[in-house]
Amino acid sequence: MNFELKNVSLQFKGKFLFQNLQAHFSGPGLIAFLGPSGCGKSTLIRLLAGLQKPTSGQVIKPSPLSAGFIFQESHLLNWRNAFENVQLPLELLKQTKPETVHQALADVGLEKAEKLFPSELSGGMKMRVSLARAFVTNPQVLFCDEPFAALDEVTRESLQVDLRQRVLKLQGICFFVTHNLSEAVSVADQIYHFSEPGVLDTKPFIVDRNQVLPPQVSSLRQQVRGLFQ
Image 1 (cartoon, rainbow, N blue to C red):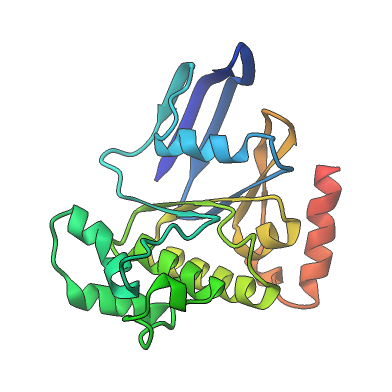
Image 2: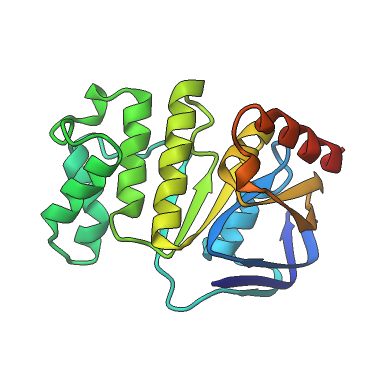
């Protein structure tokens, strides 16, 4: 599965965020975009997802494309319980698959919380519902915009594992935005870095997943930091 940016430029209020950007991304696996706030990470995945149109150039992606989205906020509908929130993408596709919804919630450890409403869920549980909702249609591609940034460390690490397992199980591709170096190392197979706003280093750092276990994580983090200084 391949995505390509061909001479992509994007202009806001007379200023260019991207100019003639050329890049190629391929899966399966998880691809992280790393960099400080405001550098263009979120805009880049919006371009890849088709939610943002470039001023010029082409964004080439698989078609038809089955996609899921996870954002920093869970964006659950307050008047729907966990089951009903996860079921929503299937409803939009005019599908009735209650067993699929049950399984999606069970996969993220929420089989006993199906009838709970967002006001009754913790922050971590809300994000698990969001994760289940994104995966209930078995999407080929997942776009994640700093989905775990507001969570505590233990919950964040647990959800990172859930995300990796689901993406790898589906042999899909996940674009993951983060400004956290440790998270990029924990989640991704490939890490792309913004050296400055709008400037993407198109040669990724390839993460050796065999190293991502303590105490090798610390060493790997130093390797990544050294490349990006």
